[in-house]
Image (cartoon, rainbow, N blue to C red; front, side, top):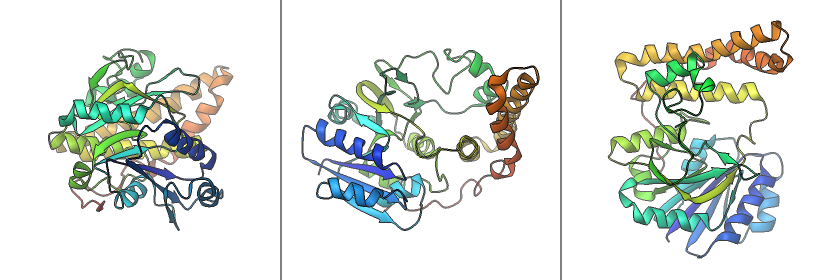
Length: 321
């Protein structure tokens, strides 16, 4: 089999149904399988999805929420395709994007990991399809607000590749896990996602580990999908805590040992500075800062959850089978 499409669902049934419909609508071949893992959803996802797509997909129903990383690992362990396509449930495949991405992979086989272009529902650019790695400079720029003030520059927003409009073909450090194509061989060699990344950061870790093995992730604007983003996380502070924890873990995993502490201090300054800035703006009468001030205060109060994340660098990682 050429391709295994893997989707992890968690209380996103309506989005997942739309994603599946777009996959089968846009498919130009039947040389693929869809493996869908449900992470103990409580919105009747399993029943509703099975009723509409039960004969077309392989459904795995987990009795507990394994998280995005471990959920993908479990599903990938049952895949038969030469390639694995990780596809978020809150996506819509456009204009035969999956075949376009496979064709792109055939043109650049040495990359090992491939991604496309993402847009929002209204067709405007969703820039979060790819990233560059964290550096001390990117963390400093983020901590002092330069990456927000000068979002569209590579100099002050290097992680977000701020100066690039996502058109054409480009080598990147990280391909978003919402639409990530990888050879099954490389996935198995890397043992899939590190389950220490429960949600967020797992694709960054995967791509950076792949890079150490000689892979060079690459993206193309020829394959386009809609990506809504963040639909399974409805509490902003919870989402931010998980995101910050993941990025802290990336610092521990991928920074040189001598600068891990510096990197963590710089990164911790980001939520602290956002909390201080929005609190001062609120005190100055800017009502628009009320909700951000409340959210960032909650994130800072919960810093014990993200300041020292996970196991130490070099700890054993889960097997992706």
